[in-house]
Image (cartoon, rainbow, N blue to C red; front, top):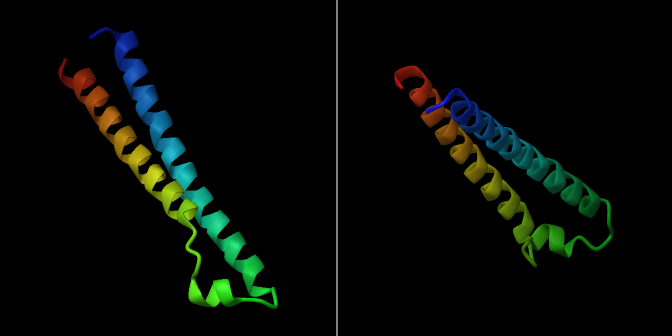
Amino acid sequence: MSLGDLSALLSTGGLFLLLGLAAIIWDRIERKRYYDSLAGRHDTREFLEGWPTRPQFGAIKIGGWIAVVVGILMAAIGGGFWLWG
């Protein structure tokens, strides 16, 4: 592989890794902000019972973990090609 191909693979892997970590952090911030706003309200039924469920928090976190895994794999493959190829 040429150096341009390797650098593209490594930089794409790093980008996926950064985006995944940003999504995981964003999930934690959004969840905390949501539950903090509910705790101050008079009607906290949704806060106490957890109904209706909020799927967006899990979706952001799962997408972030998938991006982290893809980024690590791409960086590892690019690093392997760079070292041995």
